[in-house]
Image (tube, rainbow, N blue to C red):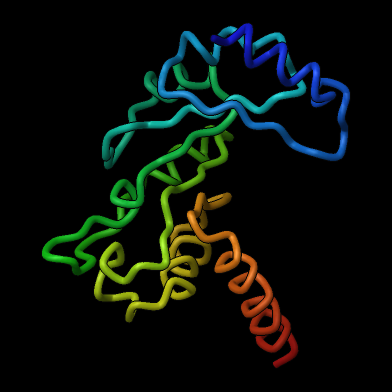
Length: 162
């Protein structure tokens, strides 16, 4: 399967492209190791369970096969009965080892959000971007992410001018 992906990327010209970032995501280290010599692609390790900490050895191991990591939202902010109850230090720990951290999956449906976000997907995104300082988010609704970035850029400029 990985050979088919590499061939498809090459046929599409992504192996020569400089302006577009190609990210290869997998939950299996063996898949990401195959892409190790392909420096044009960012290897993203997807943690498919909720974690609340990571020890040095585990992070060093991840760095041997991945350039960045994807966590589930509950690995950053824990919930109980749809209310946020705690934040973890997982993002800061991983970033201290120079691993960019992405979080998934953001949706617009209020049933997927903690009550603390007031059923507002922009408030939820903001909690992860400014609160947890993640490097990026993965969303089912790109239009919401675009709205968030344009809405909060104005807020940033206003705050900086005051």
